[in-house]
Length: 110
Image (cartoon, rainbow, N blue to C red; front, side):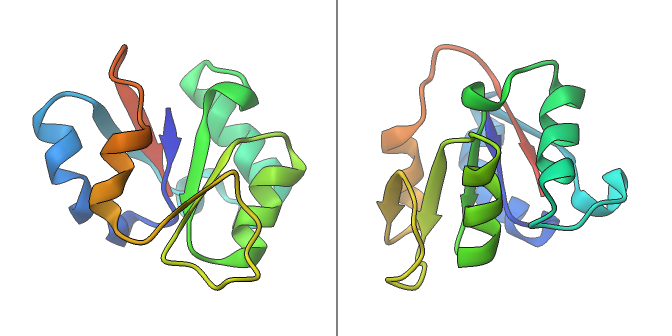
């Protein structure tokens, strides 16, 4: 599963949505929590019916990536500053397909 930084980034999901890999359905404002509040990450994952290690946060902001890491989520830094800590670093959104498991549909939240 993936959590993306904001609903505006969901336009980048067209490839994933069209193949049934991602179903964008949550946003931080829907949860009443803003990133990097740890409760927001936990609430999003809980609403997906998953555990924190099963959901990766994709983002470029170092504080948001740190927030996700602080609750035990895998992180993917996308075109981020060099000081942003993450499990995986990508330069372009299109590279995300290379790190996503295609074994089951993904949910995206922002």
